[in-house]
Image (cartoon, rainbow, N blue to C red):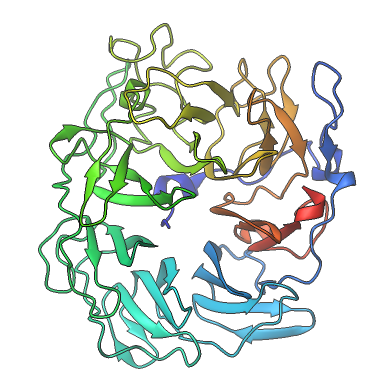
Length: 460
């Protein structure tokens, strides 16, 4: 999935004068929306066992489900379920129906950014920044047995730099990150591996390159950012893949922040889908700003979640004009947005919802809501920046937006912490992966959900 951009970890996680229970339950128009008092998170889910108050923040970065088992990865040392605490270093699994923690314990010595599973749920693929699984030397990538947690010796385990995202698609293990060599292949940043042998199977040949270099209106230079693939989102029918990261050219065409792949039978190619809005530069402190994207259930719409603070400049004629770094809002910085997914150049968004200068890191969708999560305080905040603007609604930590209008219509709230790093909609409900910063644990008005929260389907 992803490893949070370091600059985004430096946000304030407190919210003076605001309590989660006090979240608004109505929009400016007076329409009643479901709030924290109307929603109950599942009480049985496991959670991070540490508080994060000493500064050693732990974090669940991705949640995936295979059959009746959930797999959670990230940066953590202990998890708890009920009264029982388990030592689990950076990866564990549990029941998707009652939260029981399994014996699966690969014991990874570094951050795990992403997890994927084979179609039969027998093999678990792990990617991140680590050098040992158990006593087995590895390098940022491994395949392990889903029962024993043991490293599978037939799958090579060498990526020279971090792995950010893993996804199984059409019998291929698609791997993205900052690496320039992986399992003997010199393919940079994104590669397709045979899921059994771990070798480059030739399905991807993307020639990804470039990074973001610009100055804002005050003359400040963009912070260091290196070429990499950061996140991916597979379409509902498995035929297309959204890829987010740091790049300016993919497959010989210009792309920034995001591109779409057509997943053919024998190879993948860059789709013509793209909007010039993705060419915009946000704050020089956050050159990579489009953190996540997801699809509507029918695949017709793409929803994005972004950080970025404010636009850096309005001087580029190829992006939406009329906004500057000195104004409160504009472009797609610190927003959720919707785009049609048709394979053609897409001029502009269908709708955009601004947080008011707070970051969003994750998104998921169903037929009823577009869910977004981060460390945001507000939704519907077009005219505010670090404060509530006219018409804004207090919606800390997460929000549910109307798929047609983009306006807030579901507001269960969540402790902001560093931010919700992952959202996953399953038949069971909405899973949220987050952190324990400053003892953050509240979700949908309930405590004891540090790192993992499930809002059941009947509560959505």
